[in-house]
Length: 182
Image (cartoon, rainbow, N blue to C red; front, side, top):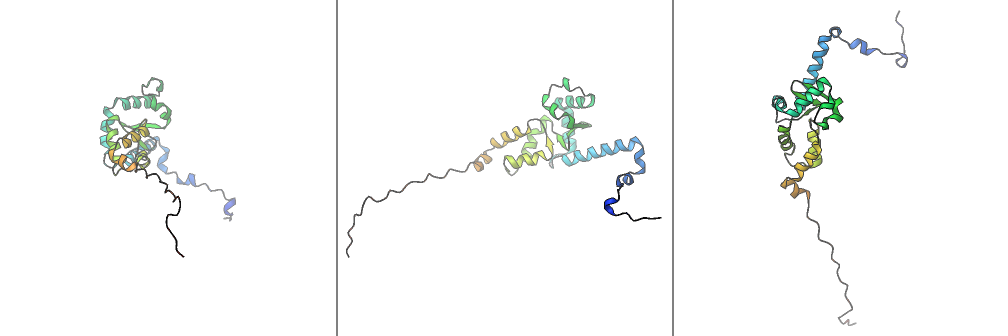
């Protein structure tokens, strides 16, 4: 017998119905996680770069190599690069790439080119930070962005408009020097 139960009194169990039959094994879960992380890495790659370029440069970077080892073995006390310790819970590695959440950690050798790509069109410090933060990360990135913008001659010209001339007072006449005939 089917009985109608109003919505507020009906407890929905939609999550149990959404699980696929193949989720019982451990292998598909691992593949799904890897696929998800690869998808994040591809979406976080700056437009003018490829994920392979970043992965190649990350493989040659000593800093990221030490970081990958710490991610795998968990020995954060041994890492010489202390800037990564506050964000260690957000870091993961897939292959040679290191991700912080949904953003790729950029190796030292590519940071300048990422700054140049983010600076196209001279957007200014705030817009450049937003642009770069949306896809990539590295320690002290904000300071590097500020320094890059402040050293750009074009940005310096646009950022500092000339000060207006100070207002000059007009002297009032001391008296009437003309005759009035009535």
